[in-house]
Image (cartoon, rainbow, N blue to C red; front, side, top):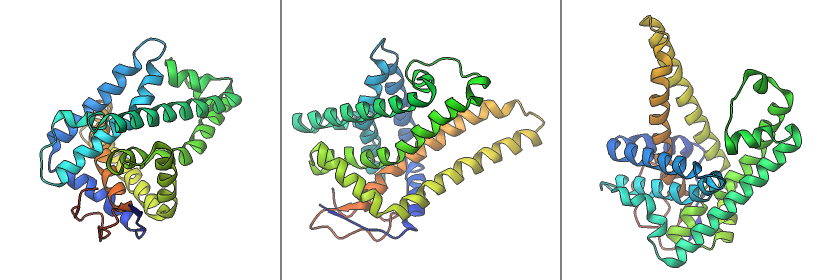
Length: 270
């Protein structure tokens, strides 16, 4: 396994490949995404430990969506059981994935703890236990500083975990090494990931504007809130369908030639 450096424009190809693959199997991939959301949501409802458990499960559940996209890109129908692929690959890899989830949860809690230095823990409590998000709280300088702290820390944190579940699952890399390789891959392909992020931000904002204008033209501005949630969920499902391609093109097996572009089909199983 070795790192593959891709041109910056590949970021747009990753986004396009995710959208195209989603529409090959829209019912399956949308259904699996909603199962993913439901799994994380139900886990978070468990008293006292729910929010932490949801964080622990997040890397494994994301890996399941990547595996589903891989199946769809190969022309196969992803079955619901693919969502737990991380725990079906063998005991050793399952333990490694759980350890990766524990590290992710611990790191996320440390990040929330850092935000408490700015607002006394209001943002952290809102995330972990919920509550009313009042306009006064949102306008509070301390609360806004806490959000900026989380956003600033989350960028390098997400780089550590972006590829880590896939490296553990498909390449048998240890959790510690997977975090290192993931960060290096994201850093070396930073241009592609920047354009990838901008493509998705632009798409979300563009579709949101279309929905808003459409409801105003129909004389039904109240309909915007009804349409915005399912539209956002559909776009989120497409986004998660694109994550596989960022991994596929960032790493190649030693005997596998690098992919020419993110839109190409895989030439070998990772």
